[in-house]
Structure formats: structure tokens, C-alpha cells
Image 1 (cartoon, rainbow over the protein chains, first blue to last red):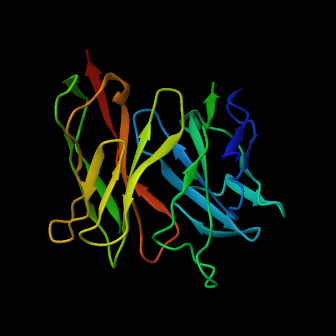
Image 2: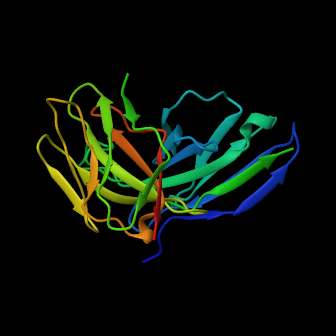
Length: 120
Length: 112
């Protein structure tokens, strides 16, 4: 059973450029969340996708956008890159409980290995 | 808002020593609590979780008990090994939200 996969592993960009990161969720999972982990810090929630829609968003600017495809995979796009966007970007997958469509508080998120983005 | 406060690191222990990493939380309602571990160069792996008060999560010799009265979820292990060297993150999943809130992480180094 494949876990959460992310690509690419590493990426180097320059300020002002745009980047796209990709994530495939764990088999059977329909919800994808994205996190930014700066060096020496805990992951910070960017947003979550379910049924191809953004369901919740953390405190990140509109330069950060995403997409979810019918097969549940997801992309994270960052425009107008800043030096401060250098970080490890983590994708996590999970599944919604019951029929409420809400991610239950008991649900575990499974993380991919991350994409290391360096902005020069 | 919901948040997690985690013991500052780094922590260095000798092999077979007892480990405690403190974690306290602030949350409305009834959050679930998690410990994740991150090995060098890797993503986060779930170590254990507890979904209601007084639950004890356990895995690989690690334990943590969900204490609502003290809003804590401290991680413990009776005898650490060199292979336990990693960064440990405490996290909560809020009752009303869809996101996880993470602590800043505690780096553990176990020396032979």
C-alpha cells in the first residue's frame, strides 16, 4: 500500500518565480492538507482540499494556491516567490468521517516526505 | 485559538535513560492529541494518538496520556535507544476545524 508521495524532492528557484508542488494521497484517502515547515519549526497549516475544493485555509497570502484533481491528488502553487518561502512543504492525507463531510477530530493525517524548496 | 506548547530542546540522553517531553495545549471543545516523529531528512510519522480524556496512546515503547484537567499530553519512554534520536512534535486536531496545530518540536539525541 503506497503511502503519501510528493514530488519533486528538492527544488531551487529564484525570487519572483513561480513553483508547483505535487502530492498523491495514501490509497483510500480523499482529503489533502498542505503544510509549510520552516527550518527548526513545526509545520504550519496552509490549506486543505476535499472534493476538489479548498475547505479551510491557514494564515497564508493569496500567493499560495492549490488544486485537487478527481483522483484526489493535489498541487500547491506559490507565485512571486520570496526568500522567506524557503521551507519544507509537507502534504498530508486523511479521510472524512461519516457523511458530514467534516474531517473528524479523531482522524489521523499521514504525511509525505516533503519537498524542500530553496528560494535564492 | 487552538495551540500547542512543547518543551524546548534539544534534549540529550544516554542510552537506556528515561525520557519525558512535555506538551500542553489550548483548545475549545474536545480535541484529539498526537505525537509525530521526524527522522533526519524525512517527513512526519505518526507515533501515537489519543482521542479523548484519560486515553493513553502507546507505540514502540512510547506512551502519552490525555490529561484534560492539566491540558497536557506528555510523551514518555522508559528506556531510550540510539535509534530514537529524532525530532518529536506534539499536535492537536481541533474539534471544529480541519487542521492540525503543531508544537515547535523537540530534538532528541541519544548517545551510546
